[in-house]
Length: 97
Image (cartoon, rainbow, N blue to C red; front, side):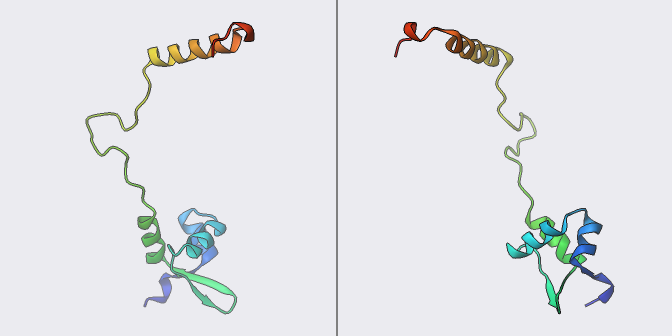
């Protein structure tokens, strides 16, 4: 074990751009390995990198050809907006249930 890679949780959070509370939360979830010596929590750079890799979210649609998300076309959005507007402005007595 290389001791120059051991960091306090606050130093690791600052180095990797996380808040200390995020680091503590990830440790509580079991995603970040920590070491408690006295009252202080420590971790290693490699443990933070491993945590980041564990938290990776795979893409929804791995296909590079199509869009990643289904987005309504402008005509669909216009129809939805027109229907919503009509329903909101229609008098209650004329609505059919």
